[in-house]
Amino acid sequence: MSRIAPLSGFPEWLPAQRIVEQHVLDEVRRVFELHGFASLETRAVEPLEQLLRKGEIDKEVYVVRRIHAGDDESADLGLHFDLTVPFARYVLQHAGHLEFPFRRYQIQKVWRGERPQEGRFREFTQADIDVVGRDTLAFHHEVEVALVMAEAFRALPMPPALILVNNRKLAEGFYRGLGAADPAAVLRAVDKLDKIGPEAVGALLREEAGLSGAAAASCLALAQIRTPDTSFVAQVRALGVTHPLLDEGLAELAAVVGACAERYPGAVVADLKIARGLDYYTGTVYETQLVGHEAVGSICSGGRYDSLASDGRTTYPGVGISLGVTRLVSVLLSHGLVEASRSVPTCVLVAVADEAGRAGSEAVAASLRARGVPTEVAPKADKYGKQIRYADRRGIPYVWFPGNAEPLKDIRSGAQVAADPETWLPPDSDRHPRVVRASLLETSSTRGDDDDSSRDARK
Image 1 (cartoon, one colour):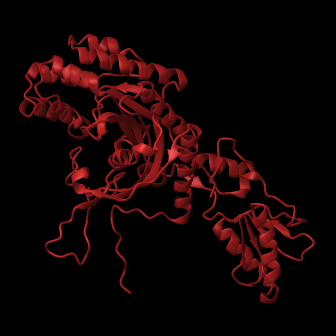
Image 2: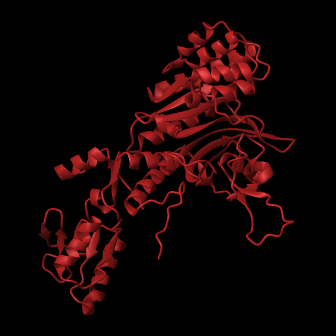
Image 3: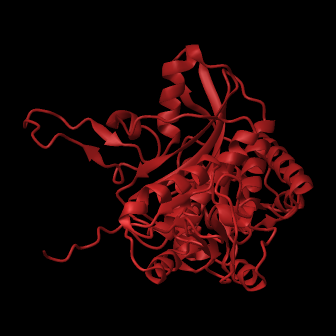
């Protein structure tokens, strides 16, 4: 058989890596549900017309077409590229069955036909939260979603994350105050700052957005403002631009940064270059950097949208934030930032002395499983030394020898003790694989105890 070539942009984790990913998903789900967000899942495909209606993503959508479709059959379906557009459709379709404000979280695969590189994939998992209202939505939810995501980050074994926030009203009001005829064009140019740099963005502002040299310089000066507190307000005022929409945006952004600073100091930073290129955002916008790995780009983003969902009579404004789970996990794994304590969920391997006695080993395993101990039975009745090595290679901490006076062996320490399969339970730190910062796992293993900062990876 010829060698199978990898398909770039479609990650497949090894078992230990998958444990890390599932731990991230479990912790994120736990935090979302603690805050009352209900889970839902939408279909993988949407009409192309709906997908292409918002944002500049027409070159990134994967089209879905039957392989035996006739020449006259149009391909009018595409795989969703995010979870916000299908969620907007879901709200419109099911509004009569929902209570507003509607709080949902959604963890699903999405697809984008872009060039794979570090942190960018063609198929990846996102974890979103959104709060949607009917006709109106209170501003405090723009504070809430940032705080919920900050709490989720603190629950994960990862480097610190900075949630960078801006406000589209602030940006648009500033550009209008400068006399910009097309504020959206200015936003699109500023959104490219990290990719092409200030000189190239300045050229775009003059040549494509139609700004004067002085106005372009003011836009770049605004984009340089970044503070961990509300001092950005005075810095913006010092630029001498005035507009009612700018005033509204400044007040809203100050409220977000101030409230987050009280709950999680240092977790949220005002960064006035954050633009978010998609055109449905209307208020607060979020992007997130992993400290020490900023070059990977934002691992979490979103914002306020007032007109994404509307049936012509009723408008459903909302605010949401989306964690790029696959991007985050890829950074944690590729840089060796986290480790799983073992590659399998198994806590105990029940040995088999001979095939005639396999039923007895299965009975021991069933008793352990009945009390929540992940257990498997040895696949072959090899010599006990081989069965122990089999467990060791897979990271299984305990081997059980049925019929022995001291049946339970901790293969890490070599200790073997008496135990009853009807009553014995492992330490909590052994029951499930642990996923922790790599240095913490090494320290914990050396000490032989459980570090308080680790969490079980529940399966």
